Image (cartoon, rainbow, N blue to C red):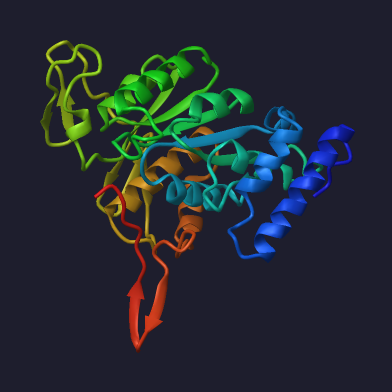
Length: 309
């Protein structure tokens, strides 16, 4: 971690943040990513903006699959870039600030920031980072004591993208709330990534009437309609902008193939070879404990994360 080019106050803030991280890990209180970031931002509030200066960034946000899709994206891009990321899933301001602080600022022009971002914090962090690409995965009710109702979150995303026209967007066209948020963007690459839970997208975010679902398609009488996908899953292949990419993941389930479709779409926008990216993603066996295989009394067990019952 070389930070010699930074101003003295920011360097001091990083030293205190590193000390906080060491203490948290030594006392086994966590991964040592969130609290150090809060210390960093308390001492130097502009840390995210100053540490990400000249670093192009990709942000991934949504209710579900942020951590897994970010891990797949990191692996897919690792052959072309030196990746800076919040691998532990600390996806609010503190976690992202400290992820940036651990980055070697002398790494050069091939560095790329890839961060999962909490859906409520996307407009704030996206503006601080000056994001190059934003990927929108899905929206459903999750932590309503902390995050707004889905339609309010979608509306905030929409305003953020309206006011930041330079951002390229990768968006799940199967989720009406994501489509509503992404539509004003100057460039959108639509991905058919699925939407199993449709109750939160029951009413149209444009007019309030009922949205009709038929297979993977959906539409409203007001004219709000599912966009045609630029990327979609077809059996064991992912078609990205007319290119069919064979995909074979160690991570189970169709949902992870859809996550891989988002990752490959980001690679496409960055000009990365998609076949090489797919091969790299096939090496991901677990994501921060998710999908990990363990032996218990002679039986192999796969660990899964369950939420939003």
